[in-house]
Every structure is written in structure tokens, then in C-alpha cells.
Amino acid sequence: MMATPEDFAALYARFDAPMTDVDCGAKCAPYNEYGVPFCCDPRHAVPTLYRAEWDLLRPTGLWRLWRADDPEETRRLWAETPPEQVPAVCAGPGVMCSGQRAWRSIVCRAFPFFPYLTREGAFLGLTYYWQYEDRCWVISHLARVQDAYRQQFVAAYERLFALYPHERETFRYQSIVMRRVFGRRHRDIPLLHRDGGYYWVRPRDGALRPARPEAFPRHGVYALAAQMPFPDEEPPAETA
Ligand code: SF4
Image 1 (cartoon, rainbow, N blue to C red):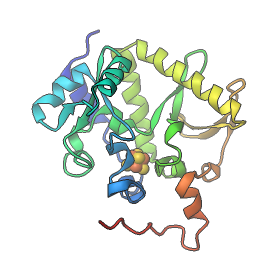
Image 2: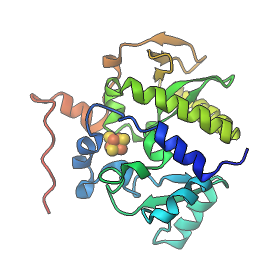
Image 3: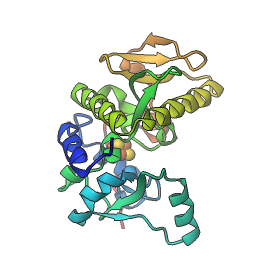
């Protein structure tokens, strides 16, 4: 099946629920240099677009293909990007997260999550790109992820797996890597299950045990903030 721009327009329409009950960008941005959410800052994450998605987004002028200042860095990133995708960034920091939310890419809508698959290839639910534990506010507040978002995420990736069957293997492998990494760290993996529940995954064999969402840990600055007398206070805004 060849994916089309219309497929992505339909995906966007059905994957639009807010991830949490707050604007998470306002929560993490004060901790980033220049006050930009981490996932809108190509120094931290360069999103990729499926080529059919790029065909949909290119006419909006809201996205451009990614080129680093350093040609070698550009070459490396393009070489690492799967052939049916392109690295791209939105027109300016925060543009997608403010007035142009309808044109957020699938990767932007999904971040910080990816589909968690068992070794046998069953798509169980959502876990997250652990490399962003120290920066992403959502990862430290998994209990705040809305049920509607979780269900839309699952439906969107079921559709993507139908359009790009090899992506199922991509995320099965990503899940294997996460189990290896967490196994070495003697940590269990938080899972937002597609059945609506919360679980810990044991890396050694993938066994699940129920979790209390409020027991999922906080990380980095959010762990420090939780120990402060007024944990819900934002850090002071950066001044120029
Ligand atoms: S998903 Fe994470 S990194 Fe992106 S804006 Fe929300 S809290 Fe920040």
C-alpha cells in the first residue's frame, strides 16, 4: 500500500486530542535555553516526516527540510533517516505548538512516546524515548496523559503499521533496545497500556505487573522541583 498525503490528513484529523490536561510546552520550556520547548528545538530533537506527509505539509510553508550549519552533520542525519522519511523542522520555535497545531507532524503528536511492542510483535501500548527523561515534563508526569490521547495514539499507529508494515519491526526493535538499556540499569519500564491500564514491564522477560501511575518516577529537574516546598511552581523565566 502506498501512503498518500490524504492518508496523513486523515491521520491528523483523528490524532488531535491533547496529550495532557495542561500545555506541557509551558512546563518544560523554562528549563531550556531561550525558553523553547525541548521537542521544538532541533538542538535536542530533529523530527522526521514520512515523504507522503512532507508532500502534505510542504505547500503550507510551515515546514522545511533540515540542513545543519555543518554539512557533515547534515550528511550524517540524512544518512541515518529511513528512506521513506525526511528530517524536517517547523518554521520557527513553537510555531506548531501555538497557532498552527493542525499542521503538527505525526512525530510531533507522538513525542515523547513510541509504540511498545513485545518480542513477539504485539503492540501493547505507549512507552517513551528514555533519552529525554531529564528534559521532557510529560515523561515525569505520565499520570497526566489523557485517555483520549492514548486511544488516538494507538489507533494512529495501527493505521501507520497498515500503511508502512515494516514500521512494526522498527518499533519492535526499539522496544528490544529499551528492554536492554533498562535491564542494564536494573529498572522496569513504564507502560501506558492500550487497555487503559498502567504497568511496569520487566526487561528480562517482558512480564507485566500493574503500576500505580503516581508511582512512576520523576527525573532531572522535575525530580528536584518535586522536592521543593511549592512543587507546582514554575522555575523563574530566563531573562535576556
Ligand atoms: S512533549 Fe515533552 S519536550 Fe515536548 S513540549 Fe511537552 S514536555 Fe516539552
